[in-house]
Length: 60
Image (cartoon, rainbow, N blue to C red; front, side, top):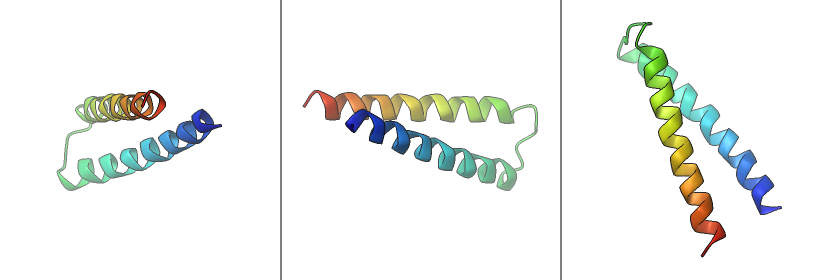
């Protein structure tokens, strides 16, 4: 049950992080060819943060 809630929460967080990243790219006028790298980097770092938070919750 806890894993299911964490997965739903993770998708919610990733969705809003992508919205914020999109707004950042528009505001800072990041060129289109660099935007996929920005999104990929932020998504990978957010996923690592969410996974480490899950491990912290699960094993403490």
